[in-house]
Image (cartoon, rainbow, N blue to C red; front, top):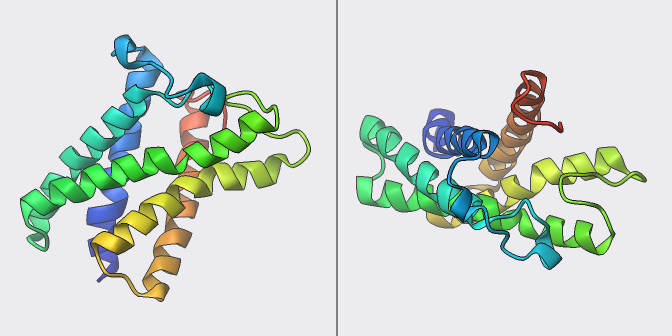
Length: 171
């Protein structure tokens, strides 16, 4: 697969889905779905709203990419997007679980190893989505490494930008 394929079918749907979800969170829309999956296990920030909207938005944003490239049938593109959104949300749960067990509050980082915690916070969703993506679309190891590296760089850069413009409280 080419880099432009990965940009169209992996990066853009995930970036646009996350920005869309962030707007929903920022403005408090769909409050009825702001129900924690498990407050005790994952904290208050991992909600049904996140799982539903990340999956829905990634699926929606996968359709124009597939239509534009013609490389993936639309019905498969919708499933790819939904799977990417769902795997993104689910991949964050183990890290949240561990943080709760260590007594780190939702949305906070370890005081002992804040940079390591930030790297883990930014990597978990990329690893989860890459597992799903590589099962859906066969990837060579070099492609996995490239997409992971680009994904981590983009995640850090976009998180910093979104924090700087005030859409997120924490970097």
